[in-house]
View 1: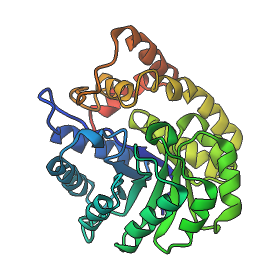
View 2: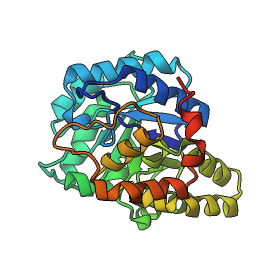
View 3: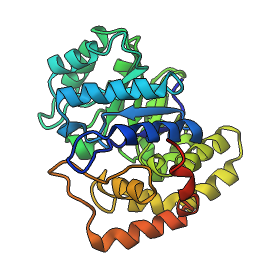
View 4: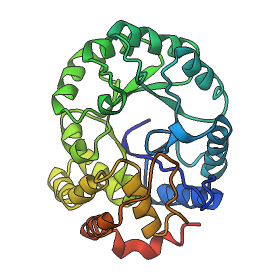
Length: 302
C-alpha cells in the first residue's frame, strides 16, 4: 500500500501565520494529479512542533475533505511521551486516515528497551497501521536494527521511515524483518540507492515541488528502468541537496511559493524565512530540475 513517492507535506500558512485552506486544496490536487502515492501530514516538514492541537485537527480535516479518498493520508502522531502518543493515535481511529507515522521520542533519549516499549504500547492501543520513524539527527536517539526486528513482530507495525542516510542500515534491517515489512527512505539524496538495496520508496521533501519527477523516478525504478531512473536522480540531485541549505522546511516553502503552489512562504517561529543570499541558490536548483519550466501547471491545480 505504501510505496513509491510519498510526500512529506509542508503546512501552508497565510501572512498572519494561520493555516491556509486554499493552498492546502491546491497542494492535494497537485499531488493527486502528479502521481504521488501518499501524503504525510504533520511531520517535521509540516512544522508539527509549532501547531496547536486544534490546528492539527484542522489540518487532518482539510486533508480528508480535499483528498476525497483519492490518495492515502498518513498522519505524524509521534511524541516523546508514550501517553500522549497513545492519545493522539487513538483520536484518529475511524477518521479515514490510512496510517500513522510515529517518530522516536525526542530529547529524553530512551534506551532501546524504552523505545521498544514505547512503540509497542502505542501499537497495542489502536488498530491503525503504524510506521516507525527514525531520524537521529533531529531526535538525539537512534532506533537500532535489532529493536526494529522486535517491533516488526507486532501486527500493526508495518514499516519504517529510515532517515539516517546510512545505506548500510537497510541491508541490516532487511536481514532481520519479514519480506512484507515496508522500508521507506527519509533521505531524498540517497533514496534511489535505498530502493536498489530493497526499499519500497521514499518519504520525500523534494516531492513538495517536484512531485511528478519524484513519482516518475520511483515508477522508473519499479518498472526495471534503472538507467533512466539514475539519469533523473542525477538531474534532481542539486535540488535534493539545496532544499537543505537551511533547516527544513525553510527552503522548500520558499520554493513552493516561487512556483505558485502556495500563497505565502510563512513559517512559524523559531523557523525564519530563507536568507536572501540563498534565493539564487535554490532558484538554480529548481531550474536544474526543470521545475521552473512547469510553473504554469501548478497554478491550474485549484
